Image (cartoon, rainbow, N blue to C red; front, side):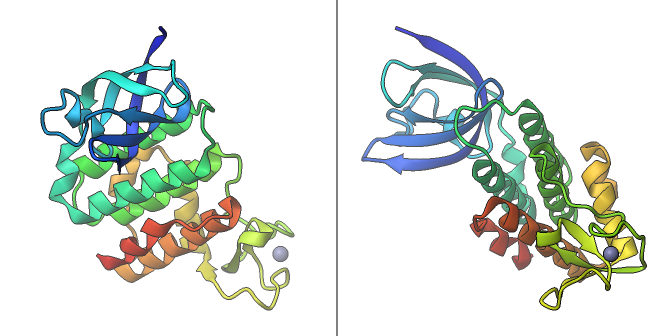
Length: 246
Ligand SMILES: [Zn+2]
């Protein structure tokens, strides 16, 4: 018998058969891993609270079988307040899907775990307009942890600083007119690019006060960053579509 304890955030919880659920956890100790939560479709399940999306719990997993299963779980922080704000809830879903897409199973990612934890906390504590900004900052910082952050403070090709850039995932970030190729159409002013630069490098705790530009521009900047992530990861992030709905 080998039981191990993990601190884990539920990235996804899906029904499995008539009674069970499969949890995709993002753990501090081992990164992403899947576990069966037996009986978790019944309200009588002792650890049902720990099977909710975004909940951080201490999970005891049995690892005797091919797929680990939950022996017990205790909620550390539920982030239940997310449900009070649709925008925050959608942004939490986006952060979870991006995390799940970015990492392979069984690869510890402590910095990404802390980033996800603090992003969920900020989304819960700051309902309202900050959600899309927090999601944009999360995506940029996750790319930073992944070692694939974009250049935002100069032309990624020639290094010159400009007032206006194109944004080119293929070139690794902002590029000037001279270095852009004809198929590039996404434009960024230098102040928009520097705003994204700040979201990438400033402490996540300062993001809530950093809502700049109007709502349309914030959505445009989010879309630009999300398209960069899609290019880097080679996979679509389905929940990004919902981010434009509020
Ligand atoms: Zn250039």
